[in-house]
Length: 219
Image (spheres, rainbow, N blue to C red):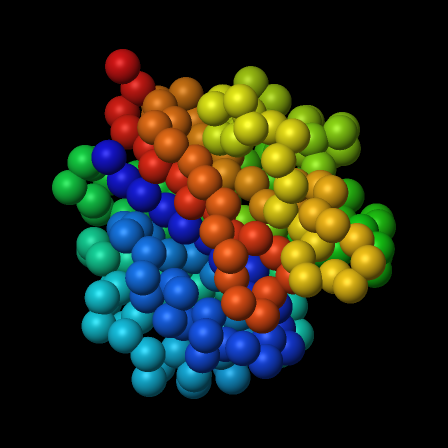
């Protein structure tokens, strides 16, 4: 089995040191990040994260565009998904349970540029998975968005739906008025994988819950 976590760090997170402590405590094979800034990279460089997850692909950027993938196991970076607004990291993770392709996703917010958001999801819908794969991140889309369902098609399954938690929410967190009411953060898996477990976790200073998914070869 292989366990993958995703955290939207929030580009102006003022509690990134606390977030690093929480992330370091996770028992996962792969850590992925969106809204990964140069400041976050500098802060995490002095945390225990780098000692535990020694294989890394980092694409820090200002504001919300940066992404990263940290792994306990060797990586081979694959061609990125270039037509999305934010950086996307794609890699083959050579875990003990077998090689797994992981794509770290962050689409444009529809509240900022709706057409760009729709274009991001439409482009991702044209990406053909090769073998066992997980597409994980902040999709800025809920289950009721037809753009997300078109992206999934018959190739991808939403891990939360697989385990009966499709109505759970990941955003917003820490809002003074609104409780979490929508799942924007998803782990999509291909048919070659079984979803063993899925959970959400608290990311200090972020406005999103993190996602953890454990997958294994389909039986």
